[in-house]
Length: 130
Image 1 (cartoon, rainbow, N blue to C red):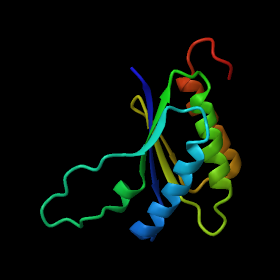
Image 2: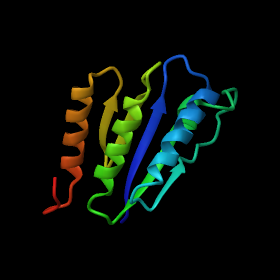
Image 3: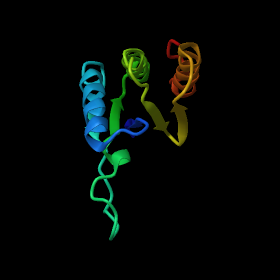
């Protein structure tokens, strides 16, 4: 089965248009690394009476990592770089792979680096370089 990473992006008090813009920028950068695909996560049915656009669904990406042993590390490197360029506000991220969840919101750059490193190590194939 193909390795998949789900990324949910949000930003405090941001509207759907802003989240879609941020998500689009991140998606474009992720497509430049060794992954099979980066697509918008399909939204579920909208319950009766709910808003037609849910900001959390707008900011959802599905990254198909494929069989590359270094793809997850490359994806995390792109995300860290992308987060580092968010000067005005810092988006929150929720990454999930094989039931393992990493939440990144208000943290120092060092804490983010350590959390991403641990996440990658937990999902590295046996014998893969760190």
